[in-house]
Every structure is written in C-alpha cells, then in structure tokens.
Length: 281
Image (tube, rainbow, N blue to C red):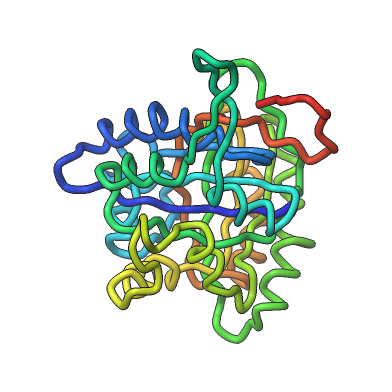
C-alpha cells in the first residue's frame, strides 16, 4: 500500500481543543470521501503534551510540539490513486435526481484555510507492520515514538537495526495492540504535495516559506513508530521492565528519542487486504 502522512499546525485564533474539534469533526467527514482511499486516521496530540514530556527519559527538541497540533495518515493501493483522489469529482451524495458529483479539492481547501497554517507537512512513508494493529471497540492509547539517528550510523543501518532488532522487542509488551514503523521515502519527489494540493486552490507547496517550515519540522527526526497500547503507563512500565534489552539498542541507534501521546479518530478503517467491489468506508 501507498501511505501518506500530513502534519498540521493550528492558527493562533484557535485553541488546541478547537483545532481538535474542527479536524477530527468536520474535516475528517470530508476527507474520508476521497475516492479509492483505503485507510484514513486523524490524530491530535493529547491534552498536556505541551506541558511535560510523556516519559522521564524523553529528550524532544526544544519547541517541537509547537510545530504541529495533529496529523492525518492516508493509505491508497498505489501512488497514482493518491494523486487522483483529490483531482476530480466524487459521486457519493444523493440529490433530487439521484447520485450527484462534487469536487472535493475546493471544499477541503476552503475548510483548511481556517483550520491550519499554510500547507500540511505532507510526505510519503515506507510503513512496516512489526505487530499488526488491532483496534478494540473501546478507547486505547496511541503513541508516536520519534527517533533521531545516532552519529556514525548510515540511513540503511539505522533503518535495519530499528526494524530487525529494536522494534520487535515491543512484541513482548503484554498490553500492546500494534506497532508500525515508518520512514520517509528516500529522494521523494515534490509531486507528493504538488499533485495533491493543486496550486490554483492551495497555493505553491514549494514556496520558500513553505519549504523552510517543512524542513524545520522534519530535520529533528529520522523515523517514527506508531504504538497502540492500553495506556501510556503500560508502555512506560514495559520500557522499564525491558530496559536491559532496550537501552543498549537505544544508545546505539538514537541521538535523541521521545514520545507523544495522540488521540486517534478513525475515518476509514485501514485495510491492507483486497477491498470488496462495493462502496465501503
């Protein structure tokens, strides 16, 4: 599957909770209509994330939490389906003459003009399911684990050790509901933004100010894991119990490691198997 993620920063006239309501509410209700979308979730950092670190061992970059308020993950069968999803019209609404068509790009752009600053930091991800995700029908906790590469490691070494040695250790956590590992796509084209955010509607994605914002956000980290667990305390306890295995690898892998709890809204349940021939969300 082709995975896209877009991080968003709220404007100063919205509180974080107002942004949460606008994104997880109205915006998700529009974006989940994108044609051929195979998965869509929205995440907003949990209350208090801007006041203290989630774990005592966390070492986030100064001000990093202020660069974003939430993000969306989108899955498609392939890259072209992603580009096409925001290019034409969708026919999923009933009018007086039956099904009617609507172009979503202008609707999304109009809402986004007030929902967040600039254009989302949007890019593709190479995703690996370390532990398949199971979402029970109750509230559980999702945590982002951010990692910055240690000096002396190549990108290939960093990704290989995290995927094959470090991440699998989390399968030993009794309260785990899933662990996915995500790395940016090497040398990714700006098409990931320009072919989705149409310039005549959204403005120029590669304008100097947008590039500076995006690079400032992306520079502090080299990979991220998404962890679903019963609650943050359960993950903290596991990390303490497994410290003899985790710590040597963390010292080897990371120059900086930190975590953020996020609240997840599922707009379209991610499906990695073949989809049926009928309309489903």
